Amino acid sequence: MNSGSGKPVMVIGGGIAGLTAAVELADAGCAVILVEKSAGLGGRVARMHQYFPKLCPPACGLEMHFRRLRGNAAITVLTLAELTSVSGSPGDYEAAVTVRPRCVTESCTLCGECAKVCPAEREDDYNYGLAKTRAAYLPHGMTYPALYAIDRTACPANCRACVDACRYGAIRLDEQPEVRRYSVSAIIAATGWKPYDASRLDHLGYGRCRNVVTNVMLERMAATDGPTAGRILRPSDGKEPRTVAFVQCAGSRDENHLPYCSAACCAASIKHAAYIRALYPETAITIFYIDIRTPGRLEEFYARASKDTNIRLIKGKVAEVAESPTGDLLVTAEDALANRKSTMQFELVVLATGIVPQTDGLPEGFRRDEFGFLNVPNRNGGLLAAGCVRRPAEVSFSVQDATGAALKALQCANRSVSHGR
Image (cartoon, rainbow, N blue to C red; front, side, top):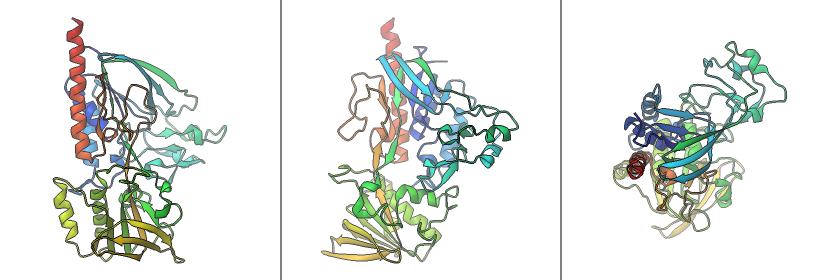
């Protein structure tokens, strides 16, 4: 049964916030159109190794949502799709969605023969550039929908190797983009976030020093389905690091980059330190921080880490990261509590880059604040936002925020019906 207006709610983004909003709306009796620009649902959470503070895998939370999606006739899932225009008013929007070709049909059995014979490679955004995939690829191990995709932009001219290898006739290389139009009662933007571009932090060595990585890259190294199969290694030589430095607020709380706090970075670095300690108990870790911000239930998470004698916390900003002839890293930083500046040597440096709202491609109507977040009160009450596109946050807040956005969408639809009578 639909909401009273008879019109669905559109949810933009298939990460944890978008998934939560979609399944909560469907459970409340509302039809949903879930629009995701990549080939599979899951968003940033699917790329994580573990949640904090419990340090459990995210697969359980995602699988719960996927179970609620499967066979639910109230939810229409569009992948490789983007909202390109919207017009109208609360309860009565016209939305245009451009759907790019997957070139793989529902006949796909996940046999993987197309990827085996594919001669072309593409950048693997899922692994933050740490690896490549074939042009015929599976988005990730627990992807939904469970289908391969063909990246036609990476395919050699006139290549049909995947077509010839597919015994099930599931590949259609002649598919074309299409525009689909929907009448909806409300639209929830749950488009999530992207990591701050670390290449803009030249003084911290990213791109210049081989063994400087970002927090999201380290998360993929730690993941068992990641490019290093769960081993955290130095990119330059593949060795296990014996000394690791974490640089907090890499670009955050900086008027030249991101002037705001990204909320989850401190807890994420403590989590990453726990990964390293579990893998390599003798590795010494140093965390350079401005302030440790772990509010609420995360304070105990921080307290546990601060008692670890192999984790050293230094209050002070890092001025420079340079590479030594051996590939080790020389970190020059202040120690505000000791009132001194020093240079220390590490084998691996991890930059805790901040959260940037992912609003690229959203049409006019979604109002942004001075930092790009969709947290400005909108008079046009049917255009809503949820999760990290609204404010920097951890996963649990994004889930709660998405539930609230779903409730607002339902209220918008119901008010529209009552006013029309």
